[in-house]
Image 1 (cartoon, rainbow, N blue to C red):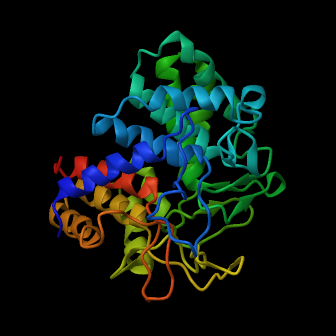
Image 2 (image 1 turned 180 degrees about the vertical axis):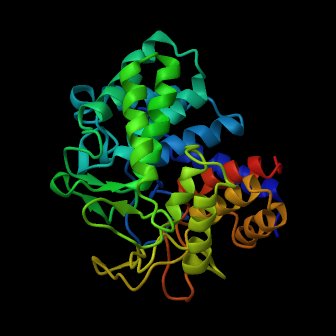
Image 3 (image 1 turned 120 degrees about the vertical axis):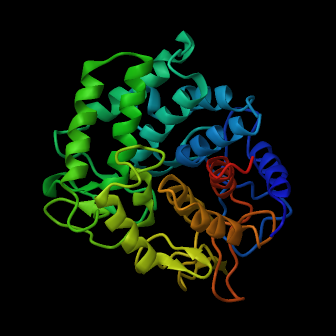
Length: 350
């Protein structure tokens, strides 16, 4: 296993490389010579990825990229200033690239803003927080969103007429609204957060379903680790979370790491303009996520073992590790490096 310090320096370089002059933070800089040629281009802004980067960057002493990014959201992210909603991703100058509303991005942004400023929000960012929180509340209808939504993995949708919700998305939104109310007190935001928590609780059927409503998606999903961290819906020793993590371990944990969800086919491998969809790999993001959960659950040895297995690779983390030598992955991915930093902090390795 390479020294943690080597990976910390890599994370620093990746965060700064992905932070652009206008405040945008891209998921991966495809101009980087390390970036493979046979993969998707990720030089776009996913507010979720960028929010995780903002939190991780602060931990390692980078505090110059957060405010510019928050201003970029307010001033450039198309339609945010009108609706308060964050969509799938954006071109670096601001227009929407893909059009699906991903509610977890609102919640994750609010988490990142609170992480940076604490409860003492500067007045210049009041509008950002209010729009992100009100935007969620305006499209929430007691048990579900009243418009179509997409999950964080961008391969599952909810529809208002069948009252479906993504459990992870609700966790991000509920926690984000609670943090927003600490920065700008609001009974409305807390009320909606409470309804979202109630809906999350009803999404447990032996383990938490990734999507719940009149139609279920029962596939085991690693993102449900987010209910423990960072969104604090349940403690790590909660019996429901234990049951859910047991399913994640059974269905998604393999020698190369933790996969996203059952029957995932997206690999990011691209040849002759065609996305090959030859099968997904394990995501370092999820392996670091599970190591955080293990640490919070008091399973320190297991946490360090899983964390260390990720450090057996090159010091620049890709999006995915594959079980073959043909597929290649986006590399370096800023979100992977952010989760490395966050896991290293939790494991006391910084």
